[in-house]
Amino acid sequence: MNQTINQTFSPAQKPPFEISAWKIRWLVAFTFATIGLAREYYDPSSSRTTLYSFHTNPAFTAAGVTIAEGIDEFSGTIGETPYARGYYYIFLCLVVVWIVGPTILLFSGRYLSSENMAQAEPHWGRRVMANIGFVIGGFLVLAILIPSIPQSVQVYRVYQSIQKGQAIQSHKDDLLGSCVAMVNYDAYQYKILPRELGGGGNSYEGYRISAGTFPDDISRKASVIIEEISPNKITVRVDSKLYPGASIENTLDSSGVASGYAYTGIFQ
Amino acid sequence: MMFIWLIVGIVLVSIAFFVPGNGPDLWPSLHAAGIAAAVYLIALTAFMARRPFPVKTRVAIWTVFLVGGVSLFIGWRTLDEESHYQKAQLNEILGVIIRGVNTSYTHDTLVQILKFYHSPENKPRQSLAQIFLEKYPNCKDGKPIATAQHVDSRPEYDTLYMYPVVVTDTEIVLATSHKYAKGRDPAFKNVNGKTGRVQIRQTLTPKGIRYESDN
Image (cartoon, rainbow over all chains, first blue to last red; front, side, top):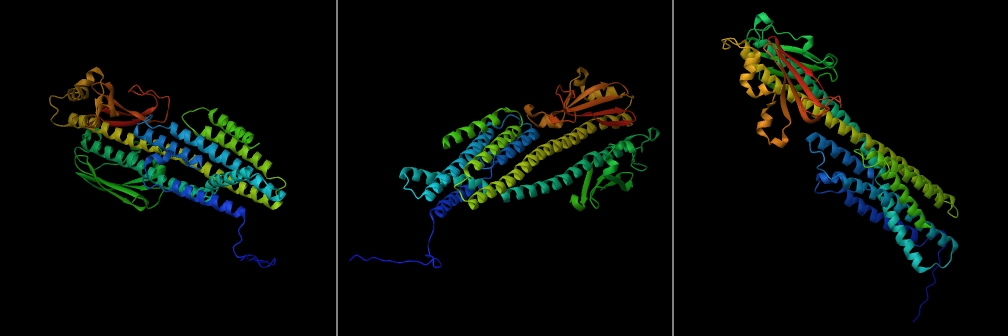
């Protein structure tokens, strides 16, 4: 009835499914870290509250809070957002992920390693605790280490892209506000002023752009061209000097109403 | 031993995090706590990655520590710069919008006065002040002119008023300030009683309108 199977392997011929206790521990920690990260980064609601929710990297939470503060300043709702929660999450993350995780991982790993090296018969309770500690610590450390490299690359790329996009939009807004609008105001004012005061006497004809129409620095940024002028209509084009090929055009009617805004180049 | 390390680490990070205080910017707290955590982790790794761990294991631990640390540091710094840049951009965009809106509202108000002043309908000839005060009688008491934005929205959201700074027969000066949009000088005293907010000034004379950005 009793069968004894004596199977031996030569050093070159390893058993097909040999897996060490270390591999199992890392595999379990890695699986938990993957599940944790998937839950952290997959946000089906994509609500604004995620800006200052818990992240394994506290810099993400802090960045979320900083941007949320900027949005509140923009909309005039300062003091209505509970930023204390952001502080709480950042502190919690620092303590749990950056202190507790690595400490448990390294102490458990060292205990299990010493046990292996000493070949002693360890206390079963300590061994179980060390294994659990290793998996929890490994989970916490991996949860921050796995995404750290792709995150730093992605964050840098996003920053570059935002800077470029916002620089173009800011320049466009600047030209619209301090150049196009000012020419419109100046031209209409010229139209309604009588000729004896240097105006057009109810006509746009004869209007010239003067140096005092714009802020001092505008000549560095753009050039203004009157494309078409008639007694009741004037069309003005502003060419950007910072982004060649980009321009804004609009037409002012007899009552001073601007319309027909057209954008070319990178302003489109 | 592990609990002593844990307590030391938690106390170290807590002190570093809370000493800079809960100021308007949380990054100084985060930087201080991050440095404390980094010092703790270097000490912990040096203490744990020693013999009897073989050299291979020790090199692996330090490699993972350094690679992870460097990438986290780069991400950390970029997020710090990016979030502050975005916050500053939002303020700048708000300033551009508010200056544009203020200029437009004030221009529309003053250009109507100028247009009527020079029109054939201005008979018997009235001065700029007479036309202005006839249209905005509340300004006799120095009260501000509420814009269309004021009329259309709830009072608690009022953000745009035009204050008559000078009203004479030959000159009208309107200053338009904003409730919360920050201007260039944080110490600038605005006409609406606030400090450091965006302010536009427009001066109307019979020769036209002059635009100035006070703050």
